[in-house]
Image (cartoon, rainbow, N blue to C red; front, side, top):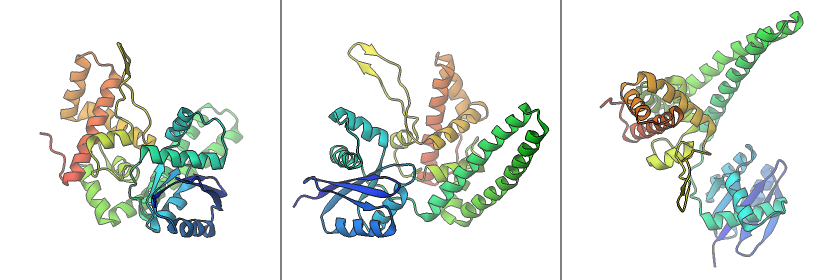
Length: 310
């Protein structure tokens, strides 16, 4: 009997499931009972791969439940699935059709299942994300305070700014407690901060948003974060290479590290200036610095070695 490929379209209240080959389609509720029913039903078959489309966080509990039942599950990029559907000429869009497209995509592309983050890793990622949200709100409120002229509005803004400033160190303490309380995370953070331009905040962002750091090849990690250039060429025409996709939070963090390193890291400052002297635009040179930093950090965690200028 052939092993089945399963596609799951996740919505707020339900899960639409499609299986290949055979074309079996069914739906369950996105509740504990529904997920248990799904697991029981899938375990009665030989399952090769289960693909779930990332849907703003709704997929997390489903993927965790399936992985906990030792089923091979992978979360796939919705943009890639949409492009695949367009290539197939699938214009109709319903949840069962989406599930069938996801299954077809998984059968054709064969994405590799990866270990899902545990509860502690997910909590750290949420705390780091919440910290970024607080800083973004603080910046926005302070800008509004500068422009506000009405006393009532300024008072409201001052109260909100004070509340955000009070919450920020509390989030920092929670993150610090989690990272320093874990021997594995503590070891990784202590290695990462030896790199000039990477402080505790950036190191913890990398731990939360790139848990694969140190376990992938340099090309895989660059593609995952979104700093790998894509060549655009057809016949005699050659377009500019560009970067796209990846994890936006991690990519922003690595660019911050690149901005600092291009000025203060002696090795990367020379590398950056050499690219500029060769006629590369500043942004292209900065992307190259970011990619090199990511490669170095990946090697440091892989080999468990501190930053070595040589």
